[in-house]
Image 1 (cartoon, rainbow, N blue to C red):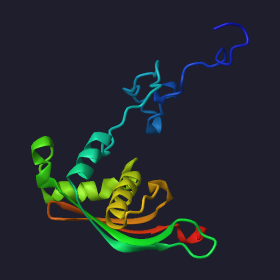
Image 2: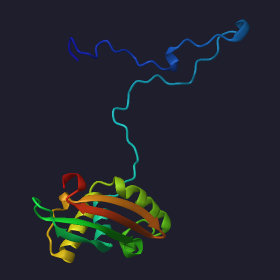
Image 3: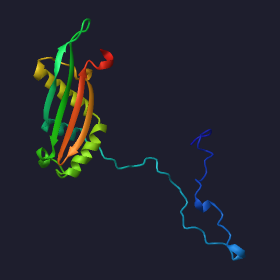
Image 4: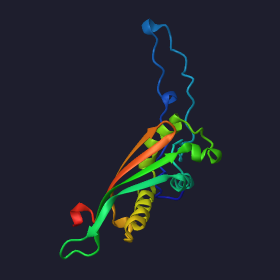
Length: 176
């Protein structure tokens, strides 16, 4: 490091071995040096273990899901274009359907863990929107941009199944 480096004045990192050992009571002499090592290197990158649902697993769960849509589409009011849609999407992901492809067992504990992780999984809401748009088109013949749907999903586990209930609307109430 050259002159003017911000690191030139950095000395050894303080550790317990840089402190003076405490005096023993009543002049019995000094206590032995602690067995801590002086820190010569710091860890620049920490590694951590975290659980998440990989994109391929999410896609597998969506492809194997049973989907039911209940709702109605009606023309938008005066001055509006397109349609208004209000409905519920019910998605059932049965882990026994993907058991042959999964490392984890198709049991209630795995379903409960997935029910906890799925709402925080990147692509989960977009996947639900895609399912909803497909079901709306199938049911009403109306093509909807999945990004325009307002979704409110609730995820729960029951035995080895993940049950997702989604209230949905288009256009979303604050845009109508």
